[in-house]
Length: 399
Image (cartoon, rainbow, N blue to C red; front, side, top):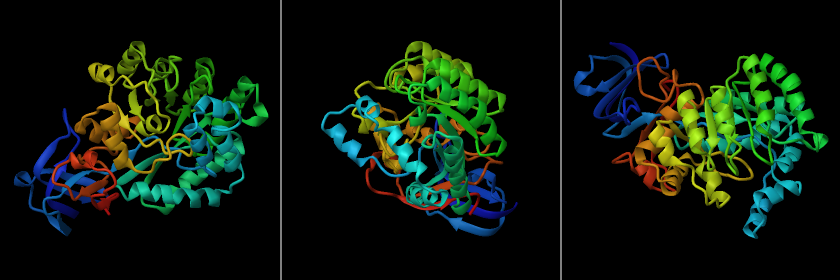
């Protein structure tokens, strides 16, 4: 069998089947950046490879996927972190002009080049831990010009580094200062101006919104989703983070790729997500930083068969987290996810949450050869350890 590269003497987590698809002595082959063979070494054909990589018993997983980030932004919100330590709530800070709107001010003052430059260290930190695909949201511009600049910066990151970037338009993140008191008027601009224009420029892969008392109502979000659907774009939603506005049910009604956060998700929302195939993306970094006490209903999601993804939610305010490995540990420790659930949450289920399950997330013939090769004795170490990065090699599109 002709191929470019063969990785042999490896243990594999294919992330296929009912669990993580472990193969104790496996082989992966790739040609042209695509996987052409994966399976036990005993069943492998004879390869004629340009390069053979002996892994010496290391574990290979699909490249990791961070399926929810706000990686691009201006400034930071360390001061708000201090305020929360003194007892201020997220809502109090937001209503006093802090929160998302403070990041909007800093982001609007930054050039596209500055946004790229400041985001690069955050992106590279994720890549150093085996991330080969990252979702990047806009949402700190809140005008056509500024949202477009954020999305162009996201596309630029995908050109200058070997990583796949999924760009999500989050124009309905907050009401900008110039529309204070007029959320409906701002949503009209999102629907009538921003989505059609930015979609026509090829800058958007999906559309998101923040459905919350300090964000937007379900009725306003529905208008955004209708516009996204008309533009042929999939949707996802920040839902049930601080309260239950039944956003997950709304998202499921639009066949959303994912509903994210979900601490206040109820049984009706779980059932709706199960029917629609919407992924539950859990964000333990935000839960930790905000010192939340209401846990997402993991048992209910499990029982209903809702796929669970995990992401850093890297953002300047509520989850300044750039470690996907620490996120795994948080998901296990705070949310009581199993090792298998954690690993599926940053591979197969994360790919589903981005609408990319046909391309990434598992080790299967035909998919992109995105791999992470680990210096660990057993997969549980990827979830168990904190502060140690056991990545041996990161492979993106076969290289």
